Picture 1 (cartoon, rainbow, N blue to C red):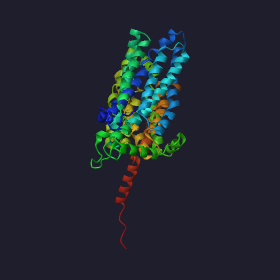
Picture 2: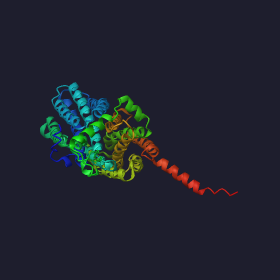
Picture 3: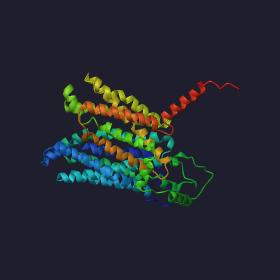
Picture 4: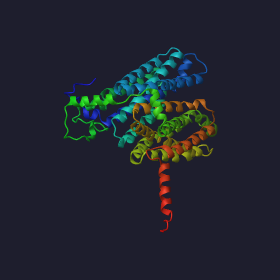
Length: 461
């Protein structure tokens, strides 16, 4: 809990800073992806050890159980977080639940216990995604939210890169419990950051001004030093401000978001991003084996080559979002990624395939930073809609989109063409609806202005 308002906690400035929050949230995303992916390579072997047959289908249901937990609990978490105005303590509780789900999965004697553990893990992950991103936006000024989200989203790539190979190596050396113990250790390191962090609303209790501090936290220093109030007055100001904030039910929030084309388009593009990010995973190994005769180890190297460029795309597009706007960053990422979806279907040289796969992943991953920044802008523009609400919608759309790959018609060409079509649709919608002044509206205004200039002046009478 908070320390006495008469004595600020040690390290108040850096513990409440937007950069420290970015590190903590990024570590949380990394841990979540690592814990999710580290056990996927070893699940088939454990199921066989327990005496089950049809292992491939059973693993698919375990992945679905995680997605189900993610989807079921996202909306309640978002609504309750905004109603209670709490981020830090739910994040700590969520991480403890994540550790518990790992222990449960590690010691599961039967398949149904494994499914239950994956559902609980999905619940814990929804807390990380919804409240972590909301916490980051709480303490970050709007002018740099894209950059901070971009750095935090690097955790997606880091967790995806580290998880599977480390899981396989630990399984071979220490058995089934090895990957879980490593994941629990990473979770403990993540827990330290969540305990140390100070929420902006709590940091303001020790602020030196009667007015609320800058959105970026205490380090921004934008409040006037000439207006000084005691900490108790600041606390009362925060309390009164919080009490006046309207609280809406999930249905009311959904209605408000439904009336915003900007919000609907962003959520749809999140669904598309979740699909195209994972759509190729089930079919690519078979495609590479049939066309190039590659073994599983070489397929793994190609996966790794495709993930490495994504380490750079999120920070770059996050910075570009702050510089030019989400409408530009999303449109460029989608447009530059389109050709590679077609190139990757060509049965040519393996080098061409690898280059296309790397560029495709680079631009697909570049969409996530401007998408999350756009949702933050939506939350700021709609009264009664908070960051947890919009990131709840983001998490739900991403969870559904990322689990669609296993339920759609198989086939490498079909998967790539569907992703291409969805990307074209998303590009069109982004052009028309993304940003405060969408690119389509800007183009129409420019054409009207040029038309008016080209029209001859009316003759004087």
